[in-house]
Length: 277
Ligand SMILES: Nc1ncnc2c1ncn2[C@@H]1O[C@H](COP(=O)(O)OP(=O)(O)OP(=O)(O)O)[C@@H](O)[C@H]1O
Ligand SMILES: [Mg+2]
Image (cartoon, protein in one colour):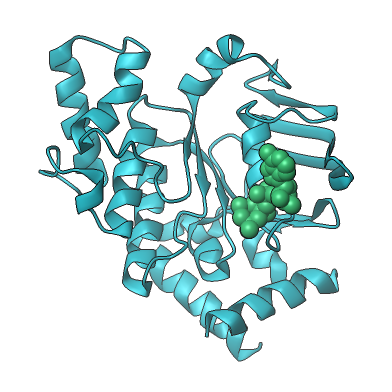
């Protein structure tokens, strides 16, 4: 076993033993919840996917890794129908959601929520209003119920008491937490995380990773995480999928990545660890 492998497995074991006991050994998958089937997409002359397939199972945390510009973020946007594939189909909760209109996506977007890179908070309203925003948009409840829910979500991300702060007063890590509080406000069944730890210092990376694990445990959501950080991928995932050559080139339980025959997978894992220092 290489030292990198030791290092990753060690981190993995420590985190998961401490927080989640038997989770490391979990190797059963729930029923399929989200399916990408034979997806093709090009932007002008630039082809992004050529026959991409991926299934996400209920209750799992699946991390998508891959080089910059390979189409990780676009895949999440296709699922939310913010971008329409040229060919192929995406199903969620048994429904075809490919290229749906804004109006037809409203119900799906209640059930699938995304933490955008950087948190994507509205700068002109305070933290409370940022989290209340989707609740008001979906007429979630009375003003009192919304207030309670905002407080509850901030507690869930370990950020109580910041309701009246402005986004500009928050650090990068705090913004991600508030963005996460907003993402979970509607009690989604699926959480999408686009680079949740990018740009954070190592302590905050661990904090966000632990938060993802905690939310997973408490809310029993299905999660898709996009990251270039293999350490995070190993800490939070059940399975890892590698986007390479316009397809999902490898997908499997994270422990099996070391036995993957595909040399690209191994190169990628080790290359990233070297890059992380
Ligand atoms: N709306 C768009 N119009 C045109 N091209 C786009 C659009 N969105 C993404 N692209 C292109 O599609 C490719 C994939 O983009 P995407 O953002 O999914 O990459 P990524 O894998 O998330 O990269 P990174 O790791 O840098 O975030 C890139 O070449 C990008 O320039
Ligand atoms: Mg991206």
